[in-house]
Length: 386
Image 1 (cartoon, rainbow, N blue to C red):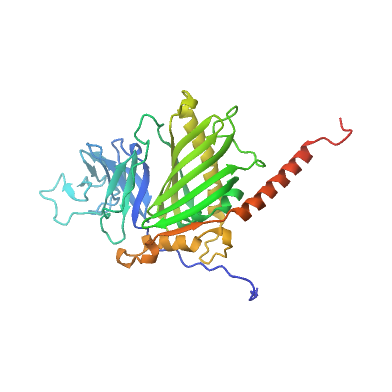
Image 2: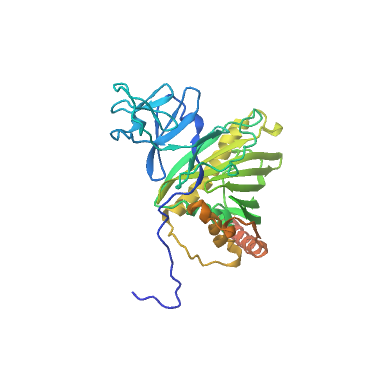
């Protein structure tokens, strides 16, 4: 088969053979604090996670430097993890502290340890291919409500996505149009701001009247009037979204977490969670609201997952004006895949872009009205029918 010169070809370089520098969330902290070692596959390798007696969570390379035993299949002994092969004991700092049958521990008995952060009920691990500790100015901000009785506990979800690289999920930061076609939401305002290690998306929208969507609060609940979202990636993989749903009887304020970590170059674990502020109009049903909002959001993520699992990787996307700053976002994202000394100003300088939604809104409104007219015509019995 020959390719016509007029046909634009898809270009796709090999996926990076390194993993992004930054804080990555492994999930809810209490999922690892049960007195046993846990296996996590991330950054192209197997890790072991366990809690010391004071509750501090530790992350090491899972394979014992003695004879290669799998530490995640071992036991927790005091503050250390013990290898199931010969019971060598390893501390959270990566040093062998004891060999029960030996007179002394070899001086070189050290293994790879990952810096960790426990915050807002979540466990973060720092990855850096150069082996440097996290800089003081690269932080994950505290989440409003995560430790407050005025908010619900986390509703948390996780899914492993095979055959797709992490960049696919990050591209959504600038992708206004997919909200209409994939998530059945009508964006009325859309803006991006990139600066330093953060990338922000500000969006306002309403639901599509021509698509039946399950209401977040269930049957009998007031109709959702719209939503406002201020979503920021803090580093390459952790997004905090201050998400407000607008209802006739009052607003529902929530915080949505959208985060991921790479398993290998072509798969990643996507996690998302939500907490909800307990408002007076919810009565005693705030926890139920949070659960139903979580299920409502889960539908949206499942739609994304279906796209990612079947799409092609493309490094030269063909864009129109309303597609947003895809190339600028990818330039921002590149900073996490080069050595710290190779980060260029163009990757971190402040960049703002607001999409003119006039044309999309006109086209989408016309499409919705046409769909509604067709639905009404189909639902109306023909004249003279019984």
